[in-house]
Image (cartoon, rainbow, N blue to C red; front, side, top):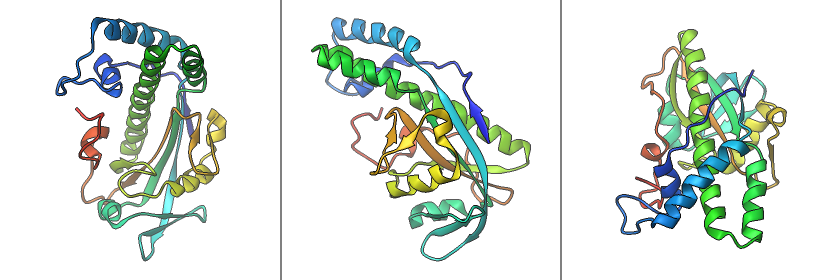
Length: 229
């Protein structure tokens, strides 16, 4: 079990603009006012981030029928077949949760209440980019640790994506104490604070198709997503 805090975040301006609906490949081009606001909210964001992450290595007991994978802690993951096929040779899971905290969310709500809609939207996009950047960094550390034990790693999977039911979030949160970094689950399996991410990475010495650190957009199956490059 590891808790990660001391990672410097890197906010990509183009990614922030993309989450606001702007892209080099789209007709919608940001004007000078939007560009200035975006820069200012990126700078503001650095003072609001409170990044924390936690991850742990959990042993797999066996692969049961109908996409079920039994864990050593007595819990069971249920994956769609598309993911099961990518987990051949996996013997453990790296399970992780990351967050940038609730301070930024509160500021976004404040800006909306003040009618500062462009700034609120820009800062919210900054938060999305920040938590994704932080998640990649924590996954990289987790992968490195696994490699030091001579494990290969699969790509990462998150509940709610690629056909994996969001209810499986509960298994992750029962497996690692995410409350140690201030993250909890709602009754609908949504993480609070909202700028949080969770994931599972398959590890093992016999993985058939090991993956290097993966790009979120490249692995997303939503062909018409607004936020893709």
